[in-house]
Image 1 (cartoon, rainbow, N blue to C red):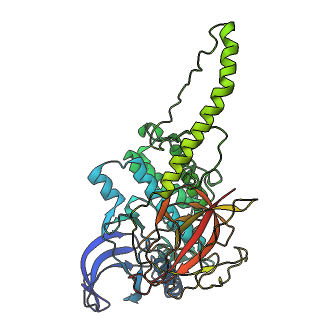
Image 2 (cartoon, rainbow, N blue to C red; image 1 turned 60 degrees about the vertical axis):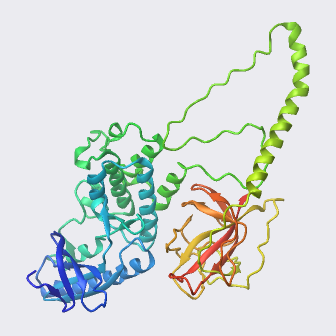
Image 3 (cartoon, one colour; image 1 turned 60 degrees about the horizontal axis):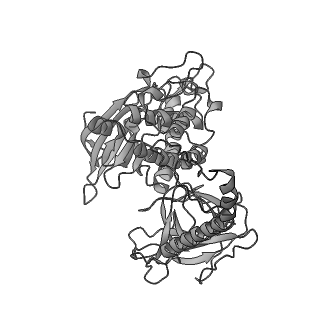
Length: 501
């Protein structure tokens, strides 16, 4: 590129990258007061043919519209600012993400810790669940295409392959459009993608290998394969890895698509089982007073052997011990239960520091529409949340938690509508607006509140506890709020949640 001002607006600062389909530049928008920085992608069709050019132009407009929607609805996908054609070439102008790619981060610090890799994988799976829901396969997930943002350290997924597919359009001898170049990165793409037939699990394969690269520092080409199955053998390079996490990654990178996870959601749920679920914040009955703490996912699970008491010294003392046990054991059980009740009661009644934040707040809602038939949720005025009785099959109410936000400022909700990230993450899977009675899984730890935020000040109510990743919950009630004073006045969704009794 000889010119430094693209479209008479974007001042090119430097080249960020180049490839078979064009170049990527860091530029400044000269028509913005702040001279905002942006990324300009120059895309060049592989064939200079008027018939092909017209088809490419049409597809380019369609793909640009998709990229605009993806970036507008998910903060972990760069926003599209503009698209245009100039001099027979096509251009995309996208948000510039200040941060480091995973490749750059690994070179700087060495291999990643397991919990950091899990967090990255969970974040990307949440993005893919949304992207795949639009029928889009990314096609080029790799360490260079995931940026850890300096702003919040969250991974951002860049460089979707759909536009590259469009630039690769040719005409076959029969006059039909075709592609001659495979989109993707050798090593990180699975076999079906190398022959031009990517599926949703192809992205999961690439993500799995990206995680393995972060854990081991080994590129796919450096890892051996099983000659019988074609599966990649990598576990010896991460000997201290949690075994279950290793199984999840093994399934993600299976040679055949049928052996992988069928969807991002399925893999996400599998990852959630690695974390400890939240303990119920209301008293409940146990069959025995023994409490066993779940081990940390990042440490090996130890087996503890317990020796029974030497209660049979001789046949004469045996009967005495049995008689004493009849009195002592119930006493111990009763004492233990009383102790547990005191501990639980103390934790429930303890008043933590109240944290205030400006979030969107308005009304309770209820609905009986099935989730596969999206329809507006009717709203009513805020009322005190009803505590659901634990009798019968009704859920035991735990409190209120933030689910996420929807992409409007008018406080309109639709069942099945995607939840989006704002300054706070989406906390449930599936990441959609649920209906009352739906079962959801917690995917990001979230504070549990006694009540939902109330207007006009939208102060958060007292914290009741923390719901941890992996907890299965039932939706008891739903509320949505809009706080006009917030810097991101989206419609925020809260729900009263419970445990199935």
